[in-house]
Image 1 (spheres, rainbow, N blue to C red):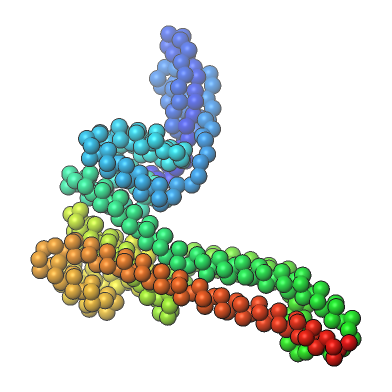
Image 2: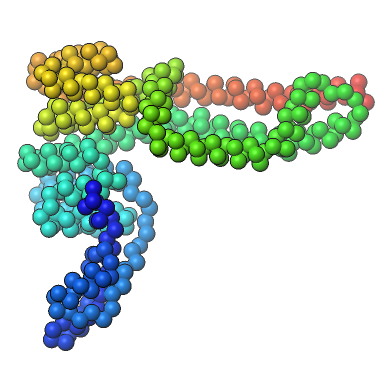
Length: 404
């Protein structure tokens, strides 16, 4: 970890000076500071005249999609017989993101000095996960880096596709709720006060629903700054507690699996990630016990992670994987049956891959069904709410003859 922190603090410096023959020379060097650059150049017999830190171009943040694309490109180049360092140069030059290009050049520089690819990747944990680095290490150890990178690219692509399907299922209702909240705030803050002034000029008693809506509007106008501050403060506090409290995250993830509509969808997504990860690592030659550790961390759910830890201990003690999965009481029958068939036939990785495909298809169908179910539900609820406000405000108009 210390090596990673040191690497992250290094910058590129441009320098100018004269060599021992008095000839002007210039260049650039990656270092932690100007003093280190000067000391290194003086040891080479160069009289330094100027050292300045080079301003690097910006660029968007490196996303998981960028890492997946890099992995696919690197696997393709290595499969075509391109040397590793040359492949890094090609991918870096072809990248449209300067930050990704700098990251790849930093990894390439470490590999060029004799560091293994997995060790070089471990210096950048914010971009390359432990699962990613362990997979690359297994490929290097077994001499199968090219096919392992192809499996890793497929794994990343499948994970991104799965994440995209879940987000697309939730995007519509979230956007409808956000827009409806904005419309409701405009009605309470602008429309209803105008109606209220008109109704007061009548000098007659208003219906109870109308009075209730006007009271709600007055409450909103009087307290909206406090409500906004409370919403922002509670959001910040919850986000901070979520980052700092592992117990809170575990409890929320366990509770999410028990929700009526979203729980089954989330559980299928977790199982898809778990089986896909375990299949990829086992196919790459990673021992089952180590592969289970990575699969539990990649699942993204505390319940499955704890169950995987129990399974790992049982497998390490000599229990069959299918029996250990059944004893955990978390994994469904399909996973148990395919694991048992895979153990008996020696095709555990293929059976787990089939389970991953099944659950990925299930997530796709469930996401479409959830979207089609939530669209009318959201419309009915919000339509009833806003429609009720509109009817309440027009009740006095319907009785206008009696009031006037």
